[in-house]
Length: 54
Image 1 (cartoon, rainbow, N blue to C red):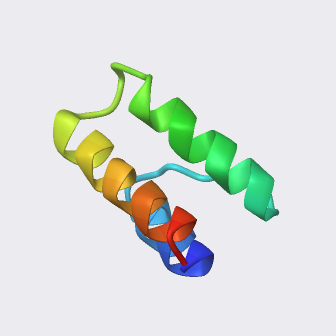
Image 2 (cartoon, rainbow, N blue to C red):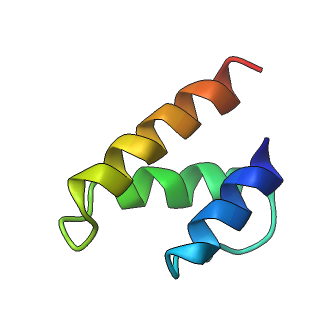
């Protein structure tokens, strides 16, 4: 799941350091950053939910 999230986000130019904690932290930072579109932020919220429930 983490690799899928990284791959998808890299298509949008969003890249995080290696590691699960870095991914979770990075995903949270996308949600709080107005630089990213609401659509991308909503997608990241869904990703976080899926990652946390698996």
